[in-house]
Image: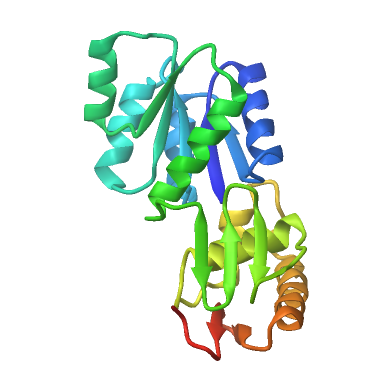
Length: 228
């Protein structure tokens, strides 16, 4: 999953980005003013935006207002130094999905971020099931046909993304855009290598679970037992 952190306090932005990378393992981009935030939302498709209100050039409220005009789905978690009921109502009316008042606990931020990403994908529960695969979003464990499967962090996130998009071909570009930030070299063959390892591990756990590769089109999970 890919997250944009918009925060002008550089130390706080770094701490939030590091927590989201090292906790749930999200790819994280960061920027420090409102105008840059809008440009970045036009350049990439994010699964979550963490947005500070007190920003230079363009306020967080105005960023949120303009962003919602063109995007109706991406969850937005607002960071605010103001804890006033009227301000909270205004934020929710503008389209914020949740808010946290500074100072806040990074562990709580991670928990809220995970919940918002699940909600944005239309997933209320923490357990995803597809064919013979059970994926626990909370502890990031995977079982195939009841057997525990050890995956690398990148293999796990590829599998999670594919399970969020059942019966859908997901292109290599889409995986790269959601799993890596702007610092990544998009022409690498890293996706193919991780897909190959993931396919092997799933196949070893169950012959009925397949990771299908449609050359030039993308990847999807299928099962000889049928997708349920």
